[in-house]
Length: 541
Image (tube, rainbow, N blue to C red):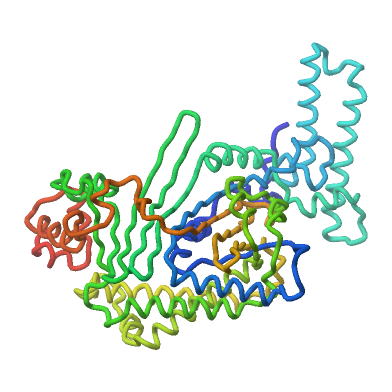
């Protein structure tokens, strides 16, 4: 049958399932955040071997001690991020032609088309059966099935009309199964939606693997990270790796320049050639414009704010659990993440609602901002008086101080926005959104050996059946024979003046190159659009 063209009674079509950018980004940063914070998470179920002293308070204390001790230790880490939308279609059977219970997919996005579309689907299935059996659809052997389809259709339309009337007249009765269906129609999956979810899982999420590994050496003042993403399908395999070396003592970050060379030479620097091959790109975090000791203060205040937010967490969020109980989690944990968890001496779980998790993060951000602004009020006051337009931007806009001021302004705006949201929101019951679960694996000496974060994001149609992100991070002792960057030559494992390019010096050279009238067409457009471009490019067009 032809679809009705009415629009006033239909709801907007569902958009296809999209992994929330912010959510995905925040979860993907778990590896980096854990590297800096010393990591945090939680665990589930009660163990029979537990004693009366192993309370929630003891569990919280054990996690806090392990996290704080880890900050002073050197270790090797490996992080793995898994994304799945499998629970969107797990447990849901193929499309039903009955009047549909809550676990069956509906046939259409539009509730007013439900009865008609369900009838059409059922009749089409019977027609296909008749063709396969080389019979006519009007044959007497199908009388009972045709009658059932007709009766179901009439019952559906009567129930739908009654349901519509009941919106204005509470005395109108609606059959219970249809009442449940129509009342919760927007939360029902559609056959098309399930198909899209399965395709996304099969062709993107399953073949995709995101990992990060490296070392953290606080006493040596350095850390490394080899971030990688792999896609492995039957006829396609690709991999992207980005080595990162952080020099805490000098305030420098090194990125592998090879990864940026091609796009840079195409868009900006047509003279680059192969000069960046097998080189690091050095990015100096402090060019001398920041207050003395600022870098150390950032780390100190970061940990202080983190500890304060953790201390404010209710002890009831923490519990000891038996490692074997992790196999009962639904949806199931990724199989390759399980062995390390099951071998743990102790497992502790922290469970928060999504709202509680966000509030805890905001408490950390507020604590960090307050501590920094109190010690360095000039960074906050100066940024508050900053320019509002490109024409008023000061010449030192690209200095480290200016960038820090911009970051602090962003943090402050985020805090204010969060406060406004809380003020307009009802009290969090913890039941309106999926929980955020953090698991901690602790050895017999009380050391953190792994942590796992599970975050569930509601789908467009079901707040409890959406995308699940599992981030697993393991810690182990550093072995001298292990290279920090297995995919790099031995002579570039540690950045130095010989094997690196200073981004600041290179930027000045590139600017002069354009000032002399050289460069690519795109590059000239970019540099001309920059603040103070006329001055930087000699005042010429």
